[in-house]
Length: 222
Image 1 (cartoon, one colour):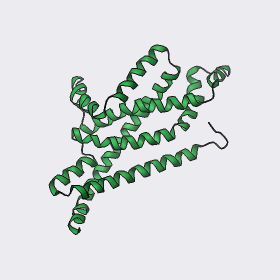
Image 2: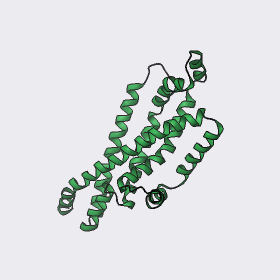
Image 3: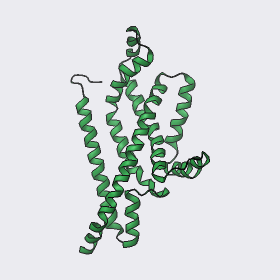
Image 4: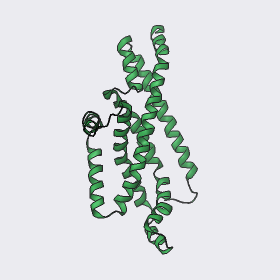
């Protein structure tokens, strides 16, 4: 038992460095998913039929293909064909971000459609353009309603980030596996990594719950 504890304590700084890499992957993926997901949601709700069709194909593809397959497809195939010399870390964040965009677009789409109807027409009556109405009236409300779903997406992306292992990114899972393969303390080390994943998840969800309470409007039930 003491020998196992010594291995964990010796490897912990190295594993925690990987946790920072994991957080970088999650932050990049969530940010890319947010930047892509909001315009996609607007297009799915208010766009013309052709735009909705194209966006629907994107969502269908990235939600239907396993992330592991997407990792290999983009890192060893599409990125190489495009001449993009991306690091394993960047490629992982981009692939997870594009996948997250498909899911986040549906979160934001549901939030937009949950708002009382007629608000866009009301903005037109005030002399706003459709773009002004969406940006100034629709999206602020929809983003507030999207926080619970966004919290779930954070948890999912955090767990999916462990797939960075397959392309060699030195995230927390990769570093844990690296140490375990040399010390043969697989159970102890992976329990430690799992505990760190759990702590990160709980802290992230707690922060988003605090944000949700912060932006909640008393008496507004939508």
